[in-house]
Every structure is written in structure tokens, then in C-alpha cells.
Amino acid sequence: MGDGYYIPAAEAPQIEMRAGVHRRTMGTTDEVMLCEFFLLAGAEVPLHSHPNDQVGYVVYGRLALTIGDQTRVMQPGDSYAIPGGVVHAARAEVDTLVVEVFSPPRDEFRRVPIADGH
Image (tube, rainbow, N blue to C red; front, side, top):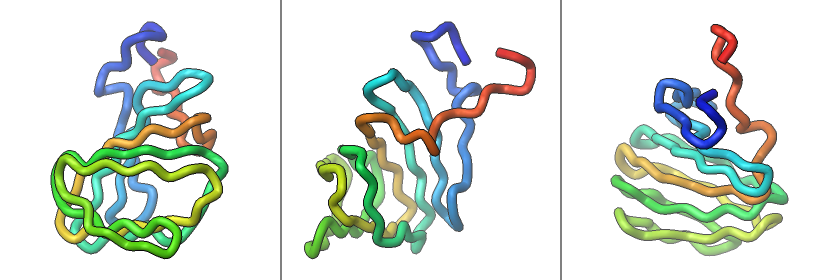
């Protein structure tokens, strides 16, 4: 798990959360968590909410993002902020990479230690 400050890419493996939606949980402290999401074209994250604040940035691709009752197509360079408790969903229009931060960290997204004991 690195030395506590640095997380090598090899220690942040990509996990398929649902069909076409892949997550890498990266740097995490007690207060904040950084995740990378790669979504294949057509992949969807259904309507849901969680108590964690969530902010994100579209690195490449196109993401139809619904926050509350409004949907917008997010382009590379666009960012968004979703307060905890607000219902939201997403659909990748093309292969898409987004980087998101959660506060507090989402327990279900915490990385699993590598089997060799690090």
C-alpha cells in the first residue's frame, strides 16, 4: 500500500464495479478519497445517492450526468459538484475517464491490500 504518502499505480488496481464501469481507488486520507472511473461507451451508473460529497472532472469522453432532476452532457475539462444526499446518475456516451473526490471517503471503495503483505 505504498508508504502512506505515495500510492504506486500497481497498488491501485482497476476493479469492475458493474458492467462497463471500472474504478481505481487512489489516494485516501481520513477525510477525502480520490478515485478514477473508466466507463465504456453505453455504461450506466443508475440513480443513487450517498451521504458523501462528490466532485468530479471529465478527463476525456462524454458523460450524460443527471444531478437531481437536471441532465447535462459533460465534456473533457468540465467538472461537477454533488452534495451528499443528492440523487444522481451517469451514462457514458463514448469511452470516458473521470476523476472524482469523495468526502468523507466511501468505505465500500477502500482499496484491498495486495496479497504479498504490503
